[in-house]
Length: 260
Length: 260
Image (cartoon, rainbow over all chains, first blue to last red; front, side, top):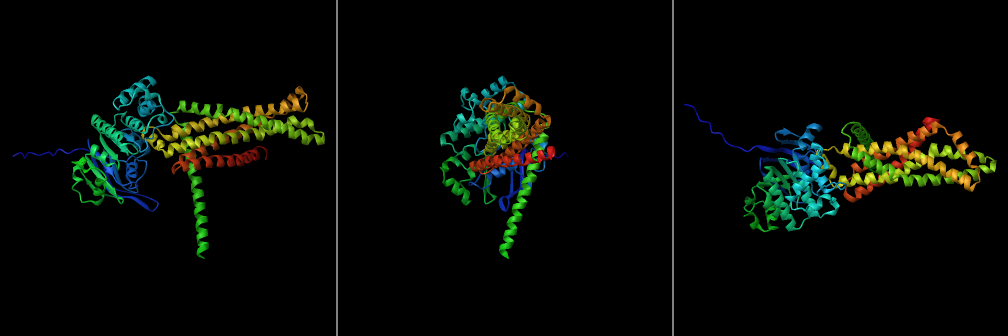
């Protein structure tokens, strides 16, 4: 008798972090961090200011080297990867930084197509056309393309940063505090853009934030970093039932109905 | 005893920090040179730096060397006339400008104008995460930001020195002929007769060394800036002060090598 094998369908792991620790001098920032990001998943990493969320993201993208532990992106160990291979890997990632990090000396359209212009040697006309196509979906007017970052508002800068991150159609998106410093309405628009971008690209995303309204809109899964460790992990709807004090503090700060 | 231990400890710590800074600076220079000679070369960036360093420094270099040439002619005349050696004015102005004043004044002016700008620009990019963003967009910051500044400085500052020398000698000539009533033809003849190519070459060697010092120190302090606006201010001050001190130190060493 042939035994029928039951194949369990599991989602592919895109980012796998194991036992990651990081300290600066004698100050331990992260200790024994473990989590997985699966294909198509949107993970929110929350925590108080200074809890090490951005340090975790910088370890993932290789701007900082962990003292201990392993980080795998698409099953490739990145911690001791050579410079050339790391640069190659980064091309598959779309990243936005906390303060936008748009290049002051370049126009908005040049910022948006910066990566693909270098990869595909685009002409100015083609670059402007691609930038125009992208900003149409992000609610920006074509006039902004020829402005410089200092000439547009903070909310628009965040949108341009998202445009730059998604321009090369990456399958992994990383957002560092995308709604920080924005009013709730603009923050909501940015969240919607993130959700739409992740869906339209079929990407997996990590968003670093302490904005719970934002978490409720964008996350499939949440991890909370507190006192250097992951102190809670779960789905947004599980937050309400959590007995974790920190989670309760975070929820109290906003309307709990958002998570229902 | 404890006090002595503390003093020895802080002296040792300061020495180690100083040595580590020198080591880091050395590695930074080697890396910058490596990326400056390796393709791809960012010609747009190099050209823009040539305009900024070379073209926009012309007025300040021209004015400084022009007035220095005039002062030199006046001072030499007033001093040498006591010994009936007025005829040596042209020779003294020429040697002083081509050997020392031209290169050093140009170096100091460029360190103040361009070095401060380079350090502030790179430090601002560093503290606003633009340099981190560059690395995640398939571009090496060393090759895109630092190498063009190094190449442009090495090209432009020798040209600025040549122009500065000419303007300085012209300043001396104008004072000598219009104020001190020297014969124009005789003054020009004396200038050309005493023109030594070794002086000009020595000046150009100094200019190239100053170009290296200014670009590397300014980029190094900018690249290692931290702590927001305060860090940008520190980087700018450190770049200008250290460049100026090293310009004056290196001019002595080069002079000793040529004429010692």
